[in-house]
Amino acid sequence: MALRNIVKEGDEILTKRAKEVTEVNDRIRQLLDDMIETMRENDGIGLAAPQVGVLRRVFVVELEDKIYELINPEIVKTEGTQTVEEGCLSVPGCVGTVERPAYIKMKGLDRNGNEIEVEGTELLAVALSHEYDHLEGILFVDKALEIKDIDELENDGETDEQ
Ligand SMILES: [Zn+2]
Image (cartoon, rainbow, N blue to C red; front, side, top):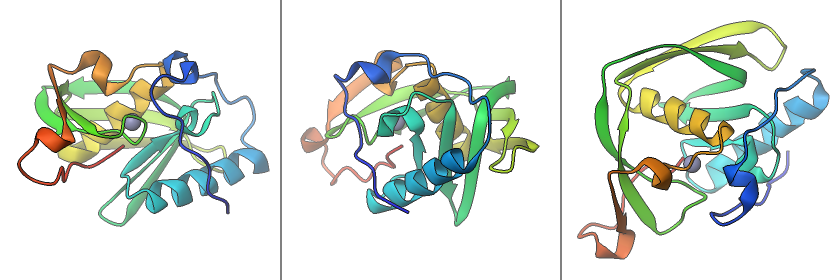
């Protein structure tokens, strides 16, 4: 495994729609391993491939010791909304209030190329929606209802970064 550099806001790769993965091969598995290592190193709860400079439809999420890996994800269903404060490893130093689905169900491929479904509520729904947006070239700051600099916050910005 290897750490990869995280691309920051301002780099145009973050504004592009990522391309489908045509073959789930060792290169993709290496990418997934590197993304997980990079996410953990940066204390994130999610990371999408464009954030490490790879314009492919791949993301990872880690919550409560469970890792979710999705290749070519599609949104199957959403229900309700929740309004949350969130951050992003590609947009350091600020958090935003974003409206996300209360429930989301996605399907996609796992690291062996098998079809899988992932569903979640609460923070998992937020993370899945946030990472999916990265694959569409959308950052949370593009849809945030309000954006704050972390140093304006009274606490130390304990927001989960994705
Ligand atoms: Zn992000």
